Amino acid sequence: MGRNRRHLITLTFLAAMVATLVVAPAAMADLFTPESGGSSNADRISTLYLLTFLVGVVVFIGVEGTLIYALIKFRARKGAVAAQIHGNTRLEIGWTVGAAVVLVVLAVITFAMLPGIRDPSNSAPGAAAALASPVAAVGEKRVPPDGKALNIEVNGQQYLWRYTYPDGDDNNLNNPFSYEEMVVPVGTTVTLDIRSQDVVHSWWIPELGGKMDAVPGYTNYAWFRIDKPGVFHGQCAELCGNGHANMIAKVRAVSPEEYREWIAEKSASIQAADEAAAASRERLAQDPNATP
Image 1 (cartoon, rainbow, N blue to C red):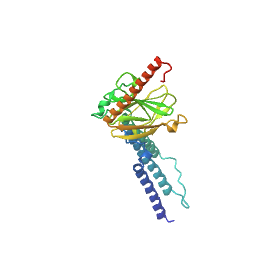
Image 2: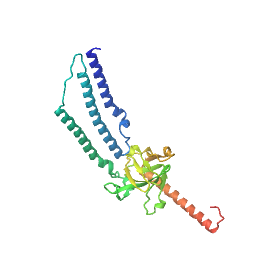
Image 3: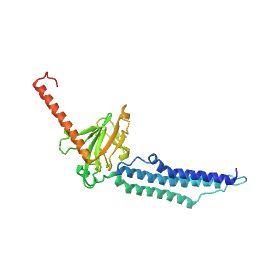
Image 4: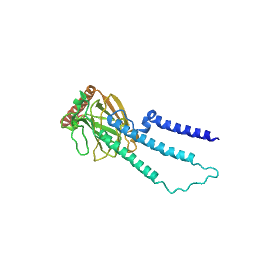
């Protein structure tokens, strides 16, 4: 094989490798970065991953390109004698400083984007914001700048998720709740109090942000804000027993009007069930032999 032909093959290979690395992130974004598109914090997490990946691509191309160049430029030749080199101070200082610069750049980008990932934003103005209520920042829990959010309790159980919604009173026993599917209004910042009543679970809806463990006896916190109606799927991300694979989760974002109607229906169902239970207890008190 002639020298020119070998150079052509090498250049073609390098061009194909670079094109693959450049095109792949756009064509298969979720393969290289976390899923996103549901909430702004999830979008920022994905953007941070993508920036880190691109920096890694630049470093990879630089290192591998230099290696391939050295293999071709300094390949063994008949009668050639290898030069005896004892080091190159400028080169060693250069790659040490270069690596440090890469780390500093990544650190600056990460800390600049971290508040937008960690700290909840305000609800969108308008009808959705009216559904947000004052919520206190307790311990590691963070709240939006205006101090208002729709605060939902997430309880992990073997093997399902229970969601408890605020109803404006101080009695948590009559709060609306749902299993498996969480319903939220669009445009409203939702803060989550995540707990477990048995073993360690992990709440994770990829398109809405990072996952958070549900630990018995401890409360973790998360947040999201969905600006368009849609359905987002997830699953427990911690091996929690033989039913782990079936512990799915779903978040359905609806209009504020639909959310109010849904909460009203849930509250009415709970009230009707309480009234029926009270009537049954009264019958049993009057006649122990009566059918409950």
